[in-house]
Each structure stands twice: as C-alpha cells, then as structure tokens.
Length: 279
Ligand SMILES: [Zn+2]
Image 1 (cartoon, rainbow, N blue to C red):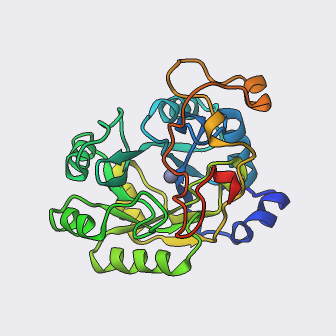
Image 2 (tube, helix red, strand yellow; image 1 turned 45 degrees about the vertical axis):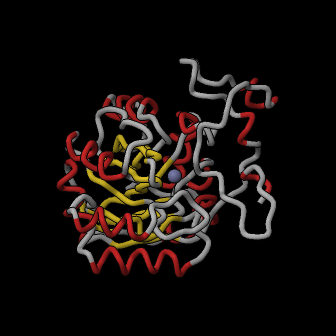
Image 3 (cartoon, protein in one colour; image 1 turned 45 degrees about the horizontal axis):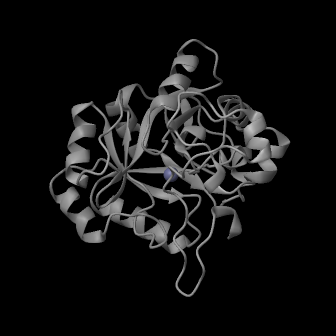
C-alpha cells in the first residue's frame, strides 16, 4: 500500500487509516478519457493513483477496453503505479452492467443476460453498478432479480461515490448480502481527483475467482464525491479515431465528436437536463 498525500487525505479522509498487512485497496470503478465522458489521461490517472496509494483499480470505461488494456500493459511492465483489472461498463439494452476481468470488448446493446453470459465466457465477473439509482442508467429491479435468479450476477456495487443518496447504497448493500453476492465499491471517477473516493479493502488476491473470494471478506470504504467536470461532455472527442485527444484540443474545448459516455445524469423531475458540470 502506498502512502496517500496530504491533499488526497483532505479530499478523501478515509485514506488516512491503515489496512491490515497483506490487504489491498481496490477502487472497483474508474473511468478514463476512453469513456468519452471523462478526459483523464493515463498520466493523470497514474498521478491520481500515486497520490492516493490505491493498490488496484478496475478500469471500467464505457463501451471499450482499449484504455484498460493499455494501462494494464503499462502496469505489467512496471510503468503504472498500481495493478489494473481490465473491465468495461457496458450499456445493455436494459441498463448498465460492468464486466470485470475481461480480455476483450463486450458486445453493445444486447440484453443484460446475454452480456452477463459474454462476461462469464471471458472468465470475468458480472458486477452491477449503482443499483437502484433512479438517476442513472440502471437495470430495473425486476431485471436484476431475473439475472440473480439465473445465477448470472457475481457482485453488487455497495458504494458508488457518485450516488448522492446514502439509502441507495445501503439498499444495494442489503440486496447484495441477501443474495450472497460479493460487495464492491468504487469512485466511478470521471476526474482524477475522485480516485480514492470509494474502494474495497480486502485480502490480496489473484485472478477473478480470487478477487470475488477476497471481496467477500473485505471492507467497504467510501463517501459521496462527485467533483464537477471542468468541461462539457459534448465537446469531448469521440472514440471514433485512434488518436488520443490532444491536450490543446482539450484545453481549448475544440475537440470534435459526439458524447460516447453514458454517465451523464438524467434530469431530476422538474429539472432541466444539461451537461454534467451544470449540476
Ligand atoms: Zn461508471
């Protein structure tokens, strides 16, 4: 475990407490610029990880594993400051699901059950993000019940740092425990400063099965943290090309492209919709 900086502890005070020897901190839900609704570069993510002392991040970009694979390769080569789980937050035709421990991209816009089977066929874990949050692109409760009854869910996100209503996280944790799922937690970071807002402290692990076993005896840590994004989602370069957005394009807000991300909040009842930073 690395030592968090004073700045990181100021942002996320729980980072100051230690963990048992042989345990690791795992942020199960992190986005990068490959998500389309985040601009965090590999270097920025590396700095954020070093700053917090997080041991493992699950890179859960929307609809792609390209960034996750690249960062994992860097980590394996010792050129990234923590271990990486290749993952993807995928928009099924019925709501969002995360596959953890993937080797390739999941098919988009298929039924949740099909996606869950695709995750399993890669040897991955099926993880339900921000369950029950009406402001996110969630699977309906009935759909979750179907998946769980079919044995197609491994884990449940018990703390999502962007979920502002504590009772939604509590409801998710209760459901996960009641159905014998592993409980995960993550920052859902779309900006570097959010990394470390939530994570699981667990005995160190190896591979997907080891992760699920360890998480079952882990400890969920986190608080609400949803820093404003200093840009409008509509100007984030799309994933259509192969080149990363240049820092000049990002700084001037001139990148062309569509919004690929799916984490933009839905407007609350009686509220105008708008870009994420307008909340
Ligand atoms: Zn997310």
